[in-house]
Image 1 (cartoon, rainbow over the protein chains, first blue to last red):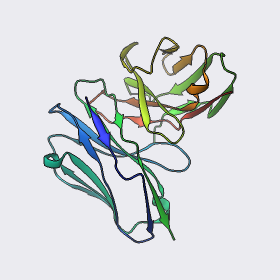
Image 2 (image 1 turned 45 degrees about the vertical axis):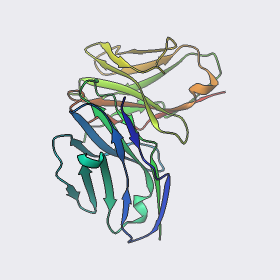
Image 3 (image 1 turned 120 degrees about the horizontal axis):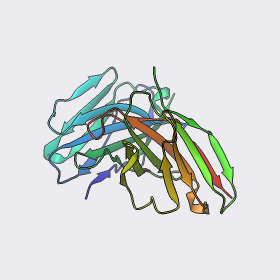
Length: 115
Length: 114
């Protein structure tokens, strides 16, 4: 069975601090896909990144970076120099090749960035 | 930029009533999905749909639920006889190919069952 664990329920930081959101996944499939979505207070789900299991390269997009480590089954997300607009719930999700795209979500981490 | 749209944004209904939630996926997408999120909890997969039939469904998606693509643009989720525990945010998503591709989500429909 597949599972995604986001152990941090809530994180609070002050603006301009760096923050890392942890994600640990479980699957026996060798081909899988990992995602991060952002859910701002308005409620929609905003896609941030997709990573497949064969690509362990870290990725940076502006203030966002992602660290994928298969050895520890982790796909962590770092926001550098956080801003108030980063305040949201962040979900990590997993999809395995056998399924028809069924996304398995973690419980989410609520990030509050205070001015 | 193309986006998934959902109507209504908020639906209030009485227990036992039927509701239909509507979604318009991104036009060139082939896979469609419904997820739900009970308030304060994680997002849960309900069903995926491809080529006019259900591809996969979760345990949540019981006989009370059905999906349909009634025309070339809409994708609907019907709940036949709503229960209090059906109160949740329902998200529609679509993707171009399927499990190998990214799902883009609509803004959600908040369903409140009284």
